[in-house]
Every structure is written in C-alpha cells, then in structure tokens.
Length: 335
Image (tube, rainbow, N blue to C red):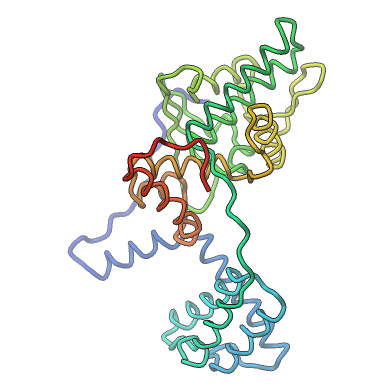
C-alpha cells in the first residue's frame, strides 16, 4: 500500500470539432470489453449451430435466424440468453455493413411470441441499502458483545474482517470477486480515504474512491484500516481465511466465502438471508445512489456497469427514484 498519489491513466481526447470522431469515442466508451466478448461467444455458438444444420451464418437469411431462435426457445433457453444471441447476430451484420436479418417481419412476429410465452423471470433478489448496512453492523456489535470480553482471537479477527468486507463492498459498489481478489498493492491510503484500482472488470482501469463516513462505526476507511493493522497485513490479499487458533492464512477468501459471510451477518442481524444474493450489497449501493439523486451515468461509472449491466438494475434504480420523489424514508432493503 502506497501513501502517494496514484499515477493517472492517460486518456486520449477526441477531436471535439469532429462529430464523427466524437460519436465513435462515445460508442467505444459505452460498449465494454465484456459486452463485446459476450457477443463474440454468442456469435461463435450461432456459427456452430449453422455448421451443424448446414446453414450460412453470414449473411444469414431470415429463415436461418427464425429457426435458430425457435430452437433456443424450444430448449427452454432463458429469455435474456436468447436476447443476447439475437443482439450478437444484429451486431455482427451491422458492423459489416449488412442488414440485420432479425428485422424481417416474420422474425419479429416470432420474437413477440417468444417474449409472450417466456418463463416468468425469477423474483429479484434484495438490495441492502444504508439503513440495512447499519443493521448488519449492529448485528456485529451484538454478536461480539454476546461473546464477552474473553472472546476467542479468531472471533475478534473475524468481526474486524467481516465489518471491513461489508462496509467496503457497499461503499465501493464492488462485486464479490473484486473484494475477494483485492490486494494491498491495489490501494493508496489517504488521510480520509482509500483509492482502489479495481482489477479489470466491465470498465477498464476503474479507480474507486472509498471515502470516510461521519459515523465511525459505519466508516469503511476506519474498518479497513483496523482490519489491516490488527491482522498485520502489509502486502498481498486483503481478505483472508482465519483459522480457529487465530492464525491468518496467506491465500485470499473465495468469492463464495464472501457470500457466506454476508448471509451469516444478515442472520445475526435478523435479516432474511434466504432472500439475498451474492450481489445484495452491490445492488444496495446502486439503489442508495439512485435514492440519493445520482444520475444514470454516475451510477454506471461508480459501479463499473456496462449498458447491458445497467439495464438489469434499471427497474431498481427507477423504483428508488420514485421513492425519493414521494419523500418516503429510505428503506432498509429493496427489490
């Protein structure tokens, strides 16, 4: 961990007077590497299907796309997956100057039928907002108090680690994989903040600033510093397994362990952990930003969301903005 100003990544500036250059720059920024990779995978699977069925994938006829989408629907493929295949076919043709075969009226009629008969989506998982975070931290306090002054070392260390995980994940709107893989070398400590260079995700070179909170018990900077200092971690993985004898390992926690920690802390706080998902803290951070008045671009950039990723949380964002306009108190959790 370095107490220095991080190197700024150079960003080439488009020619503001050239509308074409400016438009391309915006498009490239909006479509993430992950989105392009997903389209590439979907296109290759479409090609494989065409090869098996002796069809021509490019340029594809409307009949080929019609039969391909029908085959996916007949196998019970989730609607969002079929939608991604359809988008990949459209993108591949568009990028090469060909008309999207999915625009054919017969394909559109089929698509309407697929959407109309698709299996209902699973109910959305809960998002833990700021008031819910307070409940989790209060649950940590109660568990530690119940253990008494002679609580074993491993319980006290786990308390510090789990607080830091909860507060850091929420403050940074981080994915559980980003938390599990976080290393000290990715962080720069400032007097009242941390700057964290998140490992490659949906947005390149994403730097997340974790700011100090006014309430010490809910401060991610304080919690993270206390864990690192007590655990004497100065390099390598930030969050690690704690043995029953109080020894701290050198290997990172598995992302599934992050989920287990959050669910266990929810149970201690009286929150129904069965309704939670591995992304409930991250979804809660996004929901809280929306409730606090952040616009779409701010939410996308802070959470490292691509356009498809933002679509998945758009309803949650809209609901939080509606709650804000109605002057309702901020919820503990939301769907």
